[in-house]
Length: 289
Image 1 (cartoon, rainbow, N blue to C red):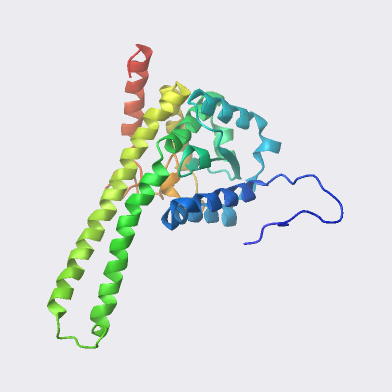
Image 2: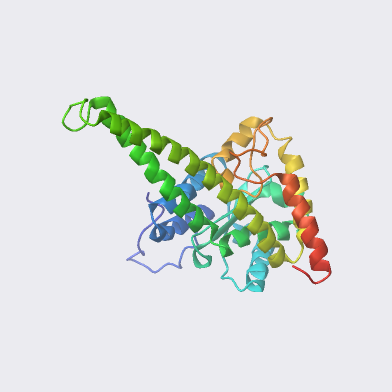
């Protein structure tokens, strides 16, 4: 995809052009390619969702205070400053991507900035930085790689049975292929459940690490309650725009009646997250972790 000029003006020098927020996201993805194509896929889907459904704003120009907040939190946890993007949508949410802290991006929506206090927003950003510090994107990419291999094998076996194999003979080894095919279906299904369980586990970890980064688990609990209450009032047609990126959001964009307390959710139950954060707040108040 061509994005703007690719070289300097040969006739007269011009000052370097500052990257816009969308180009910042795209360059971030290009650098992430070093982690493998399966790392690119979830990030790419996330970015495409926001590119086609929302406007990306320039945080350096429009939200210097947000930049300073993220820089302060990153310095507090001795992390490199991530790239920052602001998404112009009323849906209150945030997400982070990056295979490691040196190649990270944190994005927040204008909706979450409007609805949260500075203390709550800082706690949410701490949560997103925790995903980067814990290398959750890399972990989930590796887990999804194994599931994708199983899916590929399952597809190949299906077409092999459908057309009788390379030699066109259906009778030779047909029973064995069918058995292997059934096993791959079971492995694929179990693999999907394990990946979803892993995302829920990593979400708990991000809550805990994020509370350490911000130093305020109670603010994160308050933010989760406030965001969930707002998301419940957003029309389904708007929530569908975010569902592709659910695994990377602080609160899943679940449609009405779907809920999150099931095996197929990318996030743990909200009330359980809030309960653990309140307990962590009490422990930190007395110098415990």
